[in-house]
Image 1 (cartoon, one colour):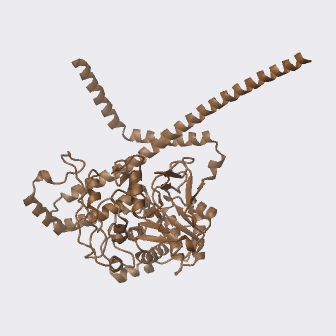
Image 2 (image 1 turned 180 degrees about the vertical axis):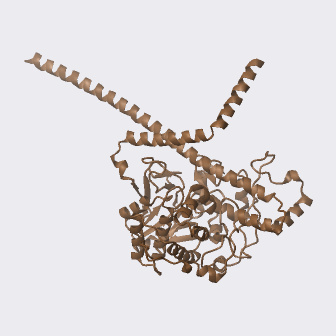
Image 3 (image 1 turned 45 degrees about the vertical axis):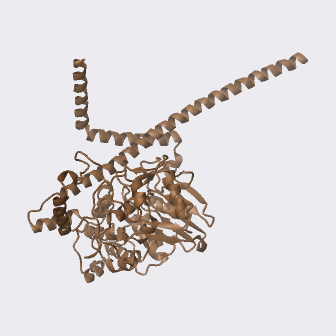
Length: 570
């Protein structure tokens, strides 16, 4: 009896040992399998991001090149000078009279056959909700209503400060959404999952509403409509893609012209003016700062709160100086400085670095930032009026606008332009310090010390930003003092990333909500999702390689020739 029991125990132990070995083997195999999938995912992500940032670099360099040509081109006639000025500077649209601008949209007739949504002002909640439903059904808003909505939006934006103040005392929670980039499905999904805007449900949308996606116009119409319906509960921040120069490259300009072939140019002119009036940041309970890109070691919230934001029409280039002032300054500089001391563009041999002049407000910080070079030279400007808000209202038109300020309006100083550029284009980094963002071509990289310095200076707890696509839709960094939130799911390809938004209650503890707006991703396994995204990345990479095949072959030939010559010398 004892020997039988002993044998049973022995076999049991052997079986258990085999089971443990099998479990360990399966575990090792699974870990290797997941590691390989993660490696493929990271490589795919690197391909997508590299191509995205390379496109931004090309955009900046091309703009720098033409700006340099314009700065050094001598027109042969007055007409040629005016034509080039309208073509390459922000003041390229002629000033309209006040009456023409106010009645611009009223001259557009809506045919009886039009079956899309109709708007009447002042807007009611039902109008905004009906607009969402109409766009969900792929209906298009008539150009008259688009211009009317933009006109009312401009009137509202002009009255807003540069930094909106929001409090959790009057609402249950505040929902912060990141980049949407023309993906209407994500916006509709957010409203479906989190609820439509209301006095109890406050929203902050943190820029980059347009470009890349196919429904940028619809997203703007919905956001502007809800902002007019709930002006105290619905807030918008400007992103780096709310910029007419960026829109030319990344699809929004083309989308508007395709959807509104007759009135497209008029809509684009109006949108250009609306974009420059968007607020720059939002402050929740004076403790949580929400802005699109990031900060730098010279970010000054007091200056950002006071400057005239509408003067910064585009962050791609500080506004050109007037022709007469520029020529006078060039003549004066010619008598005082040699040609070797003039600024050198990026595409010419660099003999000395160019740095921004020290700000009168932050000379110490500017000295520490001397290593960061300004990508595009720009001139100074007259000082602002004592009352910035009064100045903004006096310089603002109320209808289909011109591209830049009214005649006589002050230009942005280089420091003001740099402040706005930094908060719209910058990205966080793990290393200490602050350096130029050479990957994007604009803004800077800021480290944990820069974040801590800013939060301590203004007694803040958290910085919420967007601007970067993240695989999970969000990411904490800098000891959880910086939160990146990105709301465009499937941004690079179906299954490439989740979307996310963050909810803030009275305790200001961030609660992250993730989602996938595309239903097809729910039926795919992890391997299938990664395989699809990988195929999309490799296809895009192949297209890039084919597009530059002649240059690549030339470089390979030069490399082989140099290696052969070097071998023969040996």
